[in-house]
Amino acid sequence: MAARDLTLDHPLPDNIDAERFVLGAIMSSENAFLQVAGTLTADDFSLEKHKRIFLRMGELHERGERIDRVTLANELMKQGQLQSVDGLSYLVSLDDGLPQLHNLEGYVNIVREKALLRRIISVSQDTMNRALTGEEDAHNILGAPEDAFMKLGDLGLKSSLASPAQIISEYEGGINAFLDTSKRIKGISTGFLKFDEMTGGLREGELFILAARPAMGKTALALNIAQHIATNPKSSKAVAVFSLEMSKESLLTRMICAAARVDQQRFRAGYLNADERRALQEAMYRIVEAPLFLDDTAGINLMDVHSKLRRLQAEHDLGLVIVDYLQLMQGRGRFENRVQEISSLSRGFKLMSKDLRVPFLVLSQLSRAPETRQGDHRPMLSDLRESGSIEQDADIVAFIFREEIYRPDKESLKGIAELILAKQRNGPTGRVKLAFLNRYTKFENLAADTGEDDAPFE
Image (cartoon, rainbow, N blue to C red; front, side, top):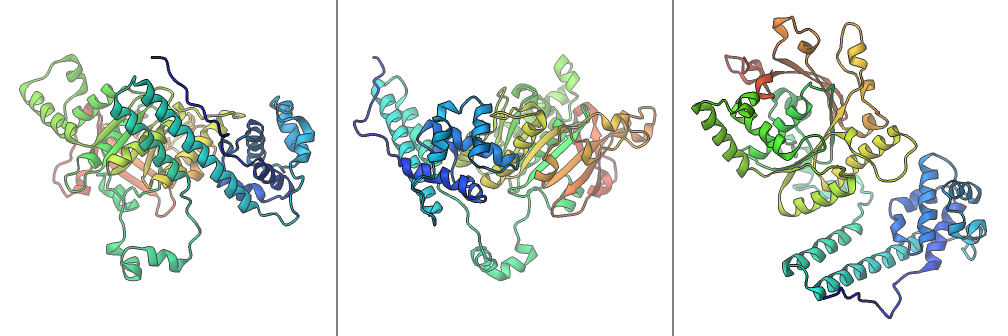
């Protein structure tokens, strides 16, 4: 059966005058773009030329340039789009009829409402088309609009400014609970005691950047944290891992071997004794039952990550998101250089963590500066590769440092790692010493931190 396209006799909802007035108001008022940008996106405009004009306005604003007819026309010309928006004459006409005391908020609300109606119609039409063709399972067709409408509902949810009185009144338990530190919401434990002591754990809405030079153990530490959170019998939470470097099978192999304390090389070669096989089976059962979700999609972008996490969050108590790693991702849109692109990604992850109210652990590469530095090779914030705004966006920045890499002849350094807390927005900085079990690619607390008599590494 050929696909049957449903068309409407009635035109799609729009209000061209309201769209023109929004764009005209931005050009006539220096601060108007800030009022609009947090509420509207380019896709909220019904006309393609209005979308292009709004996108170019955003690019001017990002660069700190004034938005007016001349700068906007020049930006459109550079993109080869001036004629497609009907030239300079159309830009000049955008504020025709705009009242001197215009109601920008009212115009924005009209544009948003019409955009929402068009999206509702689009989802409904798509569902009807799929139902008519009958080429898919009915349950799949039924689930698609449910997810789409949920996202549409989220578009209208914008947090507003709140006074201290409002914040306390909305806080569970009121002012007494707000001031009682024992009742305050605590972060999620990473399993590393000294790190949790310094940070209070990983907190919702926070961006944690974990950086290191290659082979220092970034992925290993991230997976150790993921495994602890997902398998913690006291408070297990779901963990999503997006890996742009390793396959799902490789990640799972690492986790199982680390949990079972089995040498990965022996596992891959198949030289395992009965005790190792038993340990692997037990570890496998624990991990299989845990709410761990791995994604190795190549070329994944921020929108894909956001969409997948929303779906996961609707079904599970999501406790942590891990991205391995930042420099392998690509931003959507045009960027003048790689630094701007990475900055856009880090800012996107920070906004996503706040929106989903989940901590994000994003791995990042370091430049070669620590290796060329004389004497102390410990990383610094300035070593963040293609840093841009990574340092500003992050709530926590930590580096993994293993001096044994630089001084392999010194026996006392073997198996010792440092987690350098270089930035913490809401707490102290410092160093946390950890044990690194190279055979299992596993980090553990030092015996001094756990109160055990023997060190947990060989």
